[in-house]
Image (cartoon, rainbow, N blue to C red; front, side, top):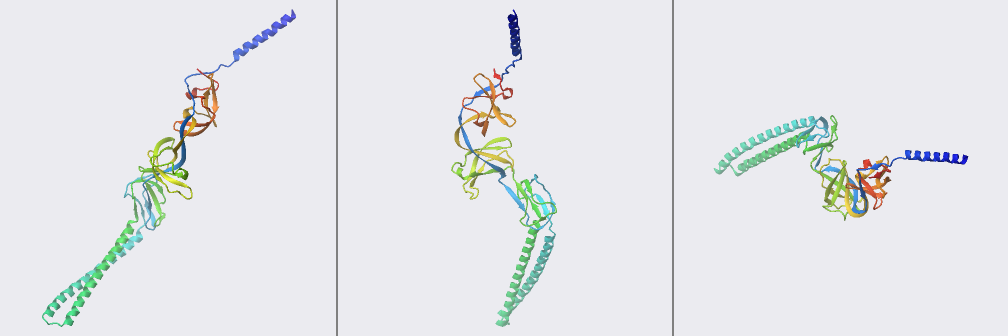
Length: 359
C-alpha cells in the first residue's frame, strides 16, 4: 500500500512537470510577405577600377600682367561671371604718370615734325624759284646743285621727324596697354572656382589671381594602368559612381602615352550630371567571370556584421554572415558565405526573423 501511494505521488509530479513544459515552450515565429530566391552562379562583368576628378574642358587661369596693389576685388569663389566682366583692379598710378610722359613725348614729336614740314615746304618753294632761274641760265650749275641738296636734306629731316612721331605714338600705345592691365576682366563666361588674391595684396606679373571654369563643358580624365592599354578603346562602356549614384558612360578619347613614373596612361570619359571637382569612381568592364551575386536590398547590416537571411529545406530562416565584393549594378558579389543553390530572402527582409519559419 505504501509502495502504491509513493508511485502515485511520483506520477503526479511527472505529469505536472510535462504540463509546465508544454505551457512555457516558445512559439516559432511565422513569417509571411517575404520573397525567397534560389541563388546560383552566373557570369558577370569583371571590372578594372580607378578614381578620377571631374574637370572642366574649358578652364582659364587669370593672371596679373603688372605689379601693383589690388585696389578692388569684385568677385568671390562660386560667383558666375560673363566674358569681359570686370573682376578686379590693380593700382595703376605709376602707369598713369608714364602715360602723361608718353603723351608729352608725342606732342613734342608732332611739334618737331610740324617745324620740319614748314622747312621742307619753304625749301621746296625756293627750289622751284632756283630751278626756273637755272633754266634761264641765270644761276650756275653749282648754285642749283646747292639748293637741290638743301631740298633733299629738308625732305629727310621731315621723314625723320615723322618717324619720331610714330615712335612716340607707339610708346604711348604701349603705356596704354599697360594701363589696361590694371583692369582685370573675365576671358570667358563661367564660374569662379578658385581665388588666389585678396583685397590689398600685391599682384605681380604672371601671378595666378583667379580660375574660371565653364560648368556646362565637363570631362573626366582617368589614369589607367599600362596593363590595360590593349583592353580599352574609344566607345568602351564605363560605369561611374559619384554622390551615391551610378552613371553609365563611355570612353571618348584614349591618350596612349605612358607616364614613365606612374606607369599609367590617360583616357577621357563623356560626362553629364556631375559637378566640377567631384570625386568619381570609374569602373571599366574588362572580362566575364563566374560569381554568386545577391540583390543589394537583400543584404542586412547588424552592427559591423554583413549577412543575408537564408531559408533551409524546412523553411526555417537563419541569418548568415557573408563577405561581399564588388557592386555590380543593383547586385553585390558574394565572395564567401553562400553556395550555389542556397535560398535567400530577397524581398521583405525587414519582416525576416532569425529562427522563424516562412509560411
